Length: 241
Image 1 (tube, helix red, strand yellow):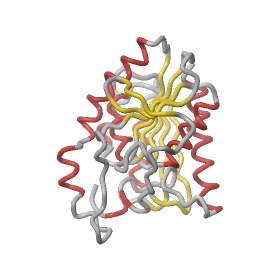
Image 2 (cartoon, helix red, strand yellow):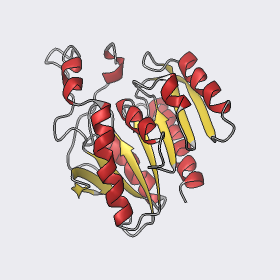
Image 3 (cartoon, helix red, strand yellow):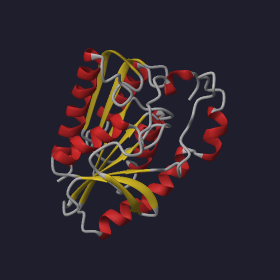
Image 4 (cartoon, helix red, strand yellow):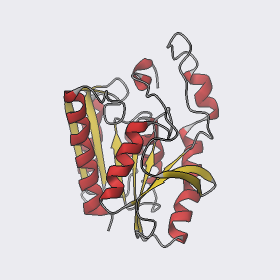
């Protein structure tokens, strides 16, 4: 996760944002939204800035409005990444030592168990930047039924080759973490596996983080984010049922 791009445009966190609420779920503080009686659920795995980000919660609410029960766990236990006072990211490697995606992957399992025990019959998961690594790990098993990776960080070609479920990858044209040529390699690896349904799209003129770290006052940025949200939602409507 080299360079500042993974963390550009940090959100202004707001613990009371969104129309859902926070409760303990699978042992973690979790933003939950949507009908608790729905048999279909979506887990959203945040970027390094965590689950209090208003744009992420707004997306969770949008997915919930389509009929899903949506959970956004706090994998960071109230300790999301915070840039230095000068806006630098020099402290990111230190933060990652205590908050690795491998740890978040393990933490996601009790959340998925809690969904099953409340009667959920199918689960999809979407990950943003850092969260995409968590979701790609879930995709190598039968923990979830479908996955969406948005501007992934840390995800390797070997990760993609191990995917076992329908997966959609939404990449950005301007992305040091997963540049278009890498996303194209992901696509080639997936299309070589005829048994895996996949969808890969590179969005022009947008940068890493555009689906959740957009400026709500920038019309073009909002439009690009909403197009990605629609793609994400359609993937889940088609594959989580």
